[in-house]
Image 1 (cartoon, rainbow, N blue to C red):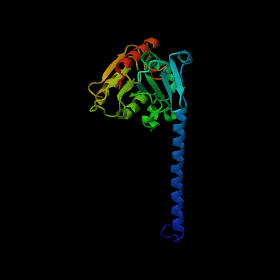
Image 2: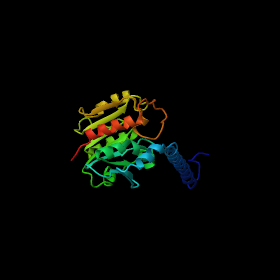
Image 3: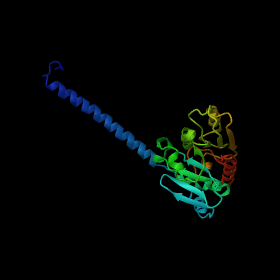
Image 4: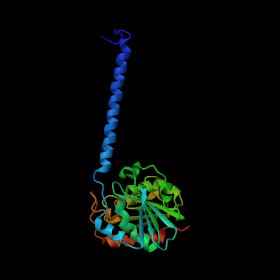
Length: 256
């Protein structure tokens, strides 16, 4: 029997049943997708290496404050008014970058705010730059930067900052027409943000951008969270990589 042969009262009921089935199926797929994303963001999250973190926590020149939205690293003396909002790479805890950025804070008087991206992925974090700069109101000049996927997000927030710093990363949006000061730090042994990928995305940045490739550094050399799948093999001493990062940031970060 076709719909035309069905009693008129039966046809709407069949259509409503079909709509409920479709909507139910779509809802179930949405739940499965959301659940899959949630599981992915929580599995395999890389935390800080205990040794380096414990060492910097004992440094009297460094103050560490956890605000929930981010970790604020401040010099106990000699603050310059310079600041850096740093966005972690995908599924790397904020604590995994404290040891790497400590020299910049202690030696150069720079305040660093390491963000805690939603779901451990900067891609899912819609918060504006002010969410993090407000955590350090005494800072008068802000750069935004990030590692890997965090750098991609930093590029999206760069219009609200005084400068941009890329740590083993590159932009997906076009900033070439801007006059923004940009520093790109990368590693010769990076197996993820490879030297070729950095070069291919160079056109997205202003022609005045500064590119520094650190010999022997891998992708994970820009943090202190252990080995990362898919990465190259680092040959540089971690302390030397940290020193180069601090040296480059100290000479680049703008003052108001």
